[in-house]
Image (cartoon, rainbow, N blue to C red; front, side, top):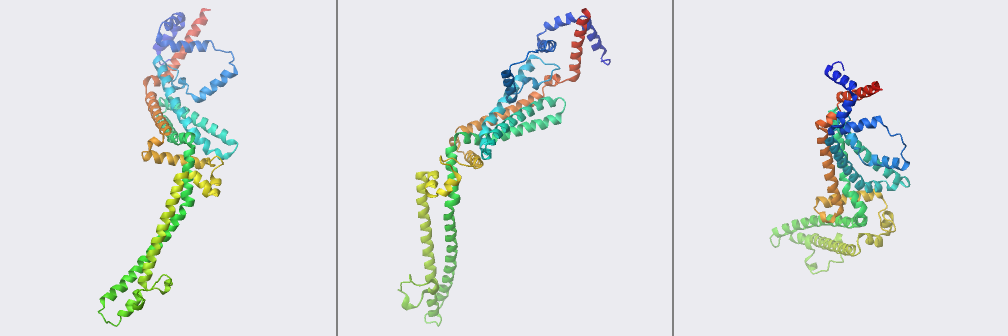
Length: 403
């Protein structure tokens, strides 16, 4: 430290009078953290902790951010210590809420992987928890030394917790509302496999309607030409026969006559009546089925009418067999009802979603503002750390020389 002669003289003074400096330190409340640090370095605790305490400590380190990792050791006062604990609590709470509400989503997503699904779910949850907390710590530790790296860490923390928050609502649905999700999946299957038949019938009716329009246009063309001719015109009888049949057949029952033998206007009338009957039949059948679905519920209706479809997608208790399918239904159902304003039907799902989103936002903002504080940057100051360590060594040398 030859470039700082004043500091060198101060260090020499401490070495000459170590007891006076220690006494002065003990009288200054703002240096209490420094005294604790010196005591911990001087009298290390060599006693081994019980295995239970070690295990609990390891679990706590995984679940909770250590406030000491949110500042350096060069200079730490009481205010910084308290604020570091507060920030650690906010970050840890936000991450824990996100993981707990996302855990059901992970569990059902991995459900189809057999025996390893539970372990894989737990490992993934713990990894997400650790990564989120470590990235949060990186925001603080890098701000003083690596601003670009700190920005990347902050973006990473925000993005990760936002993604976890977006799965909080569907995850809560998976945990608390599986029966309703099973009903929604059954309704999907009814529409895909059952009601799709009615869609095909309606498409067929639409094609027949197009044929009716074509026949009616041809009929109108013949009638227009017929009406344009004066009575007694040579082609009048020919056009009339083409449109309606002979005059002698004007009262004939045409229902038994083949389509190929019908006059054009009679054919158009028959086609129109057939389409109307078909549409009415489709509507009647659809109303009857919908009434049955409303009475029984989609799940029971599917079980009683299409047992093969039911057994392929649901177990005996009526639960969806595929965890991925159930997760997809939960996502689509949650976001559909949220966007359309059906918040009352979401219950706890929207509550935990809002809580998760709010705590994630507060944690990201708190990290960003805390990391930029001057006292946080000062705690990571290497030159200040070196001076403090040199002071400790000077005290140690001075006390050794007294012996």
